[in-house]
Figure 1: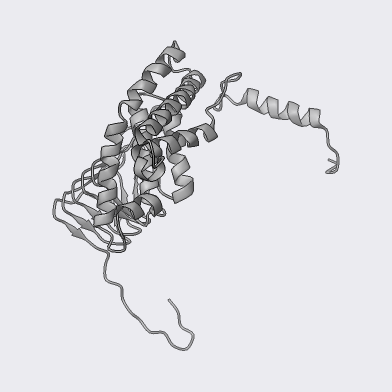
Figure 2: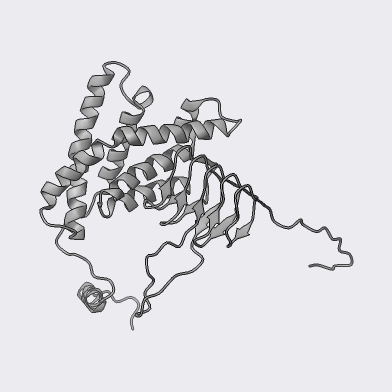
Length: 294
């Protein structure tokens, strides 16, 4: 093969042939995709409605919020319609998009209330925090939870694609990976946050605190008769008032009992009762000489 030759027709034909022969990667053609830039605008508008004192106009706040709400309706309705149409999930996508959009907008006060508890918890558990405004403006936990709380409500409505796009936007910016289907209670605190992973079927109670690098993941999968993994509960249940320190890994459908502490760098695959204290084994100190090593 001449590496310097260039035949666009052959390349395109080969790409098309691969797509047509790949039964495991079918794509709906001829339909618009959700627009990531517009979804980013949706998040900006939601942020301005939830935190008007910081991101809204200083004057005529109610009027400004009404304008933002109207813009949000128009943008979100279009993106929900596109997602429904692309995913081919139901008939009458235009009518359903309007219904879903109104239903979501009515959940904005609920999202704000939950997010306020998260912000309060982050502030209360971080002596470096100078106030709630700093947590809102600067902390990656606020961005991650704004995206998660928004995506979770959209997912509960049965809207495809958009919830995952929204949480992955936060993931790409903060390094915090929260699946929109995870169930997270009130006063959820993330400290630092980089590298946190929270799986799809996780259930997290109230007043739970996670540090950077924590993984709440699956230990393994259950497969059907054709060898495909089943979407069954496979991630941990974290009860109320649990603290999990940095770089600990909690795997499988196990329960961490309420008021427990999981120390740093712990690998946990078994349930523990309430009020447990789990730490790694104490490190040993050795000296080496004459070029000896581990």
